Image (tube, rainbow, N blue to C red; front, side, top):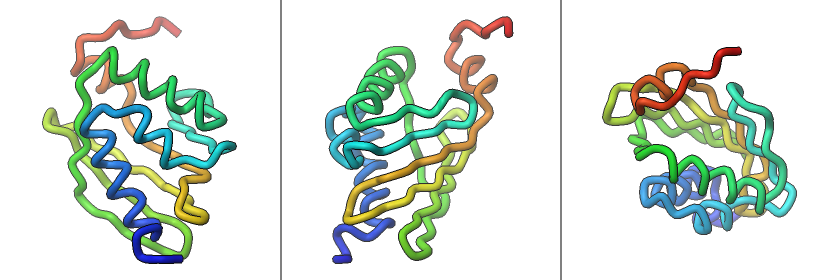
Length: 123
């Protein structure tokens, strides 16, 4: 694996695209059959579905990812992040051949909804 496709490098590119709210650039970082599982939601499968997920999310809230820590272990990158409003979370990215094959994220979804003035589901 070259340095430009190392897990840390790929996640740095992911953070740049995320902070630019650029769903196509984000989607390009995933494999065709990638899975993005934000644990508060159902897993999203496939590059195009992941792109649509980001398009929806960027249309409902201004989101910023500030890197607190970024670690790499083998084909995994682990990102600890915060946003300007104080929300914190972490993400695990499995990178194969320079693309994200699997992502799992942890955050407090209720805090996100409250901070952005979004409706809180009843169930």
